[in-house]
Image (cartoon, rainbow, N blue to C red; front, side, top):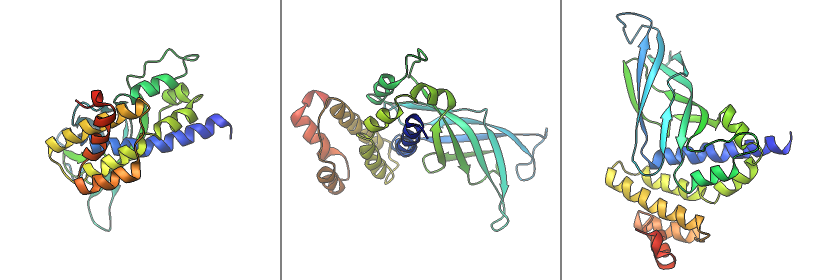
Length: 241
């Protein structure tokens, strides 16, 4: 295994967790509407031939699109009854700043003049129930096996290890932010969490340092990222709006 392959494996591992955390932070929901082989389908018995996915999320911290071209495998559940499904598809993610700039920096311009507005990933999505015409669900707990799509892997392969290393500066804060977001559904609290995470990301991008262990202990008590943001406000007040 060459160094580039090792770097891609490391990068995929970092991104798999980081993206699922990000989905939780932005409260990413998806509605899957199924298509059938029958003209007058019965969702309990008709063969599903495809799906359409619409996503809903909090704003100002990136965007996600789920492609409709993927395949859907239906699984019978003999122990519990009913049918579940597994979607194999691609997702396109517009990362929030400064992550978007970090991806842009590590893209291989020698091979492609590639815009990093969106990065494409392959993944699987577990559907717990396909016996209705549609299904609304949170994505962060259902998506797995997230890995760079073929084109994106080619773009980032050369610098994959360096990209993974730089993203690891932000990954713990995404993971901790997701643990906070998982405790509530209130849109205003999600908006505040995103505002705080944007300040943290900008601060880290400007070379600032945060004592993760100490600050997250304080954040546990506060129930938010405010203690970390207070440190940033003292050191770089221009980043806290």
